[in-house]
Each structure stands twice: as structure tokens, then as C-alpha cells.
Length: 246
Image (cartoon, one colour):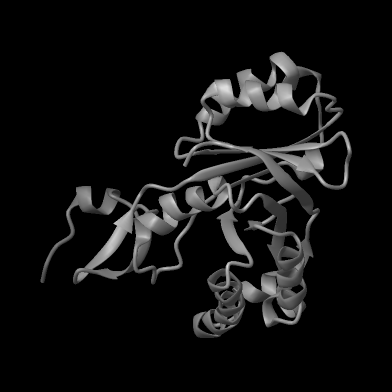
């Protein structure tokens, strides 16, 4: 019979595996500890959009500037980085200087999230790093709708297979709109990163606004939205006036 040493007794539980996992690629399972963070901020009180765009372009920060469709003096600012420290080290100083300093932030629209994997992605790094960046920086897709959501606790209690079926229904709608170049989605996890305790952030991106509204309407009939969402929104609707080079 094997004996347990004192050092083995003191070792404690194994640390959690926090890596993102995708499907098999070239016969090997995919794993990655890289992910992309995105922060969305909304502002009012803008009287000179051009000055804001020029300051953002000079900063070298990756992202986009949107004009707010529902506020004639409103702007939205999306910034993108693999290093969340960049939001403090580079974005924060930019926002406290020049034309940004005169803007009035709208805290209810503040969103921060990270890309994540579901476990069966054929190209994990493309899903985590490259595709989201291409989507938000595509100058042919200037319209955007950004919003947070929180699932109800009942969803987490469902068997894993049932969860997959519900998510597949949602995913099929997203793929149909995407393949037709009507709407392209960004999905970010924001657990512990959101002051309202939301679970996810969604960005709907496209060349026209109507399909972005239509996909939200279509999603309302899915099981996830009709049965397992606790809250949705607020919604920011805007059109890009600046996007970094992709």
C-alpha cells in the first residue's frame, strides 16, 4: 500500500486551469492563455468630434470612435488590447487630457470584457485575438450596437448538454446573419469586471443599422433570451467616425 508523505498532505488542491480551450487542430488539442480585452466608454458634451478623433489617432491606442445616434452631443469610445493594464497606462492619460477632458462620461454605458472560447473552435487564436479585432476595425462595417446582459441563475443549473442546445440555437442565428454580411457579433465575458454584475457584453457590427436591430428582434424568440436572461442593456447605438488600422 502506498503511503502519503507529509509534503503531499500539505500540497493542497490543484490550481485551476484558466487556459482557453478550442477544438482539435492538426490532431492536437488547442489551448491558449492569450485573450483580448475590450473597453467601451460613452460620453456626452462633445462639440468637436474632429478634435476627439485626431487626439485618439495620435495616441496610438487601438480602437474606434462612434457618434451616438441617440445623443447629438454623444460619443462612444472602444479600446482594444491584450494587456488590460493598457487601459490605465495609455487610455486613462489620454482621457484626462486634450478634448477628452471636457467630455462628460456616462457611467451606465461603461463596459469591460474579455474574449473567451466555448471549447470547440477550429482556430482558437483567431477566435480569441484576430477575428474580434478585424470585426471592430473593419471600415466597411461602421454601425455598432453595444450592450451588456446577465443570464439568470437557472441557466447555470441546466445540464451541460441542454445548455449547448440552447446556445446552438442562438449561434445559428448569428451565423446566418454573419454569412449574409448583415451583422457580425463580438461576445465578451465580463464576470467580475462589471459594476452591475453582468455576465457578457455583446457588440453587433455591420454596414447598415437595420440588420443589427433585426438580429436582436430575432434573438428574442430563442430559449436563451425568452427564458434565461435576467436583464439586457442599456444599448448604445452609434456609427464609427474613426477606426484604427487593422
